[in-house]
Amino acid sequence: CNDCGEGEGLIRCLSCSGTRAWCPSCVLKAHQHNPFHNLQLWNGRFYETTTLQAQGYIMYLGHGGEPCPNLS
Image (cartoon, rainbow, N blue to C red; front, side):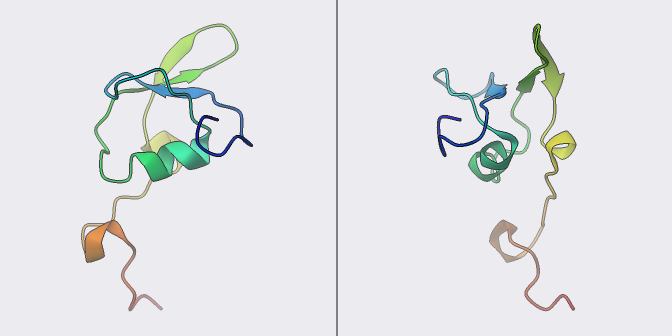
């Protein structure tokens, strides 16, 4: 992964400039405010289309993109 250096960089973004490759955790952090970017996941043979939702993304519509602090 280009960000953390720990996870395997299997996900790339066609909407971002450059040739970065992220692990699932870092791609979620990097795209928190860009949920409609075009992502691809390396499956071992080729890149296939994926989504942030498929990687575990949850879109929070309030509180600056963070979960509601009043959730119990």
